[in-house]
Length: 167
Image 1: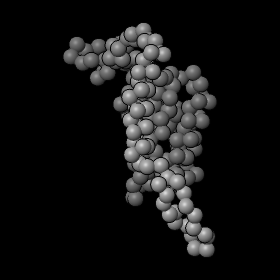
Image 2: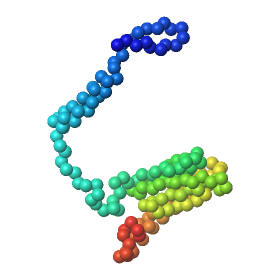
Image 3: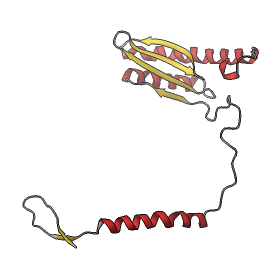
Image 4: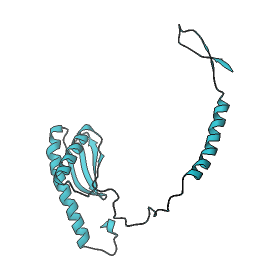
């Protein structure tokens, strides 16, 4: 079936042959029906892997990651400086930390760093971006010290009423 095609002013009209929408739908449906059957015959079943729910909750699958949860340019500058200093001072660190930011009109930005859902460092940054590098250096040192202290405390003290992640 031939349909008129709309063209901009000044361009001559031409006629094109278009495929009916029903034909497109039927070919898509046929592909959906045939593809799983072909896939099932060509790909062998993988060996059953252990469940993701098994294992200790303390095991971290990804170690040494610094996550960026900042919002503003000031927060991004802090994060970038923090990561550079963190990687330079502690290159083999296996600690996964997150850098969070809450911008405020009165105080600049509230910045905190978490490790295992606990705050290891918390500060307010003034809107002056020049203060981010010294603050990031202090944050890297304090965060590492607080993480090590927290891990030592968890190893030395145990409580039957609390699970390891609650200590």
